[in-house]
Image (cartoon, rainbow, N blue to C red):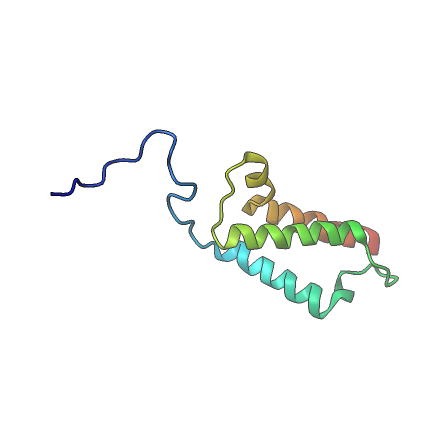
Length: 105
């Protein structure tokens, strides 16, 4: 008779023991940024039509964090978990859009 599988040995737990849950708000923000930056990049330019690279950096960070957090992936390392969290999406959006409003106005 085969033995029933027992608990995993200490220290040998799988990396992704439980699947992450889908987070619709960061995922929708990432999709909106992807479409906006791809279809109409001039929406993210300054009032005089120049590209604002700091705003683009913040918005691309928000988009990346939105995709990572939105599909439910949770990095193991604390630094990566903070950089790609739902709070990072909000911070990237606030920094990027705030910069565009400051420079553009």
